[in-house]
Image (cartoon, rainbow, N blue to C red):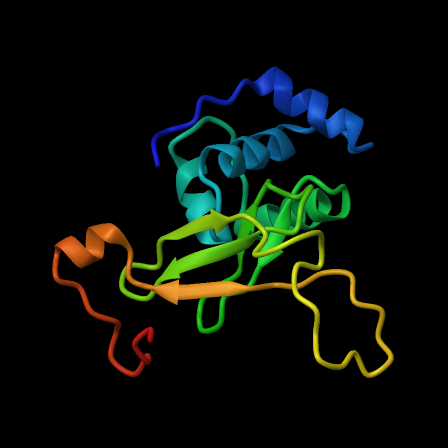
Length: 156
């Protein structure tokens, strides 16, 4: 995935529309998420260290929480991996994850409207969303002869 050009004014407008106060840390974190979807908090912090405007690790987590509350970010928690954040929030999409390098790409809803999958039983719950992760090996790792990390089962 190539670099995405993000306009800081668009980010400020999005914060205002979400009812969030526009602050330098929020602008910086949201720009980072838009440029680097599926980032961890540490990856965002590393990206921000190369830009003006210091922010602490706790500050990144605080901003991510406010972006989630404001509906501008979504957290995903792939099994065995750190939480990742993205700005694609308006739909019920899924993810494909490389077992070798951890690369993540969006996958549109499997079939139909949200929640995309109908459970065999809801146990009385009202189902609002289905979270699906597809695991495998990305094209770059396949070309390099990559195999799943030790201890992880191979995709079937």
